[in-house]
Image (cartoon, rainbow, N blue to C red; front, side, top):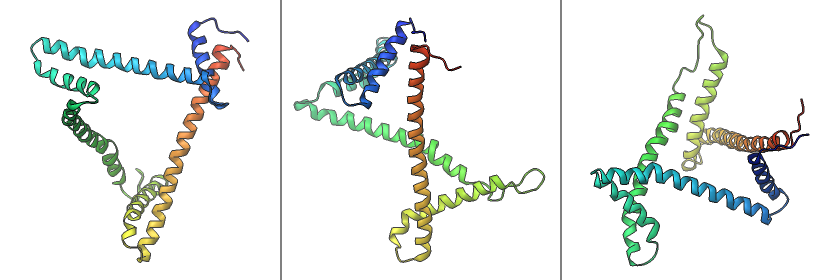
Length: 214
């Protein structure tokens, strides 16, 4: 056992222990660590946005591109004018920003998720190898994928046809696929948190306390 002499590791270890104290109960030490984390994050992102957005916009405006001051001035007004008669004016830029963000996000998410899902679902149901034999692994994956996609889509429209036995049967299969997907997502999230906890615990044991198990 050899305690670290690095001040940065000591600060990190004390903050980790302060956060871990919430496992016992809510306490003053945990709230201090939480406040430090929020304050450092807010300060970091403020500096990041200032040096990457606000400052370059003012420099370009001084160079002759005065139209860049319009979004900067509008953003400052949104942060300042919270109450009073002039607060009604903020609905115009706020609505514009919300619509612009929604339109850009829809395109990005469609390309990243919907388009990729559609592309991944369009492939042969029976996959052959170069020798002409059936690749059973890829074929089973293709059948499971197309069956799951179709049954989940039917599940969302099955409520309009509750008396049709065939649709109800496919809807139950879609419900099964959805439960598997939700369970897998929950398990992945839980496992990632466990890995994060294990990583911090390993940091305390190996780097702070200097205890090695090899």
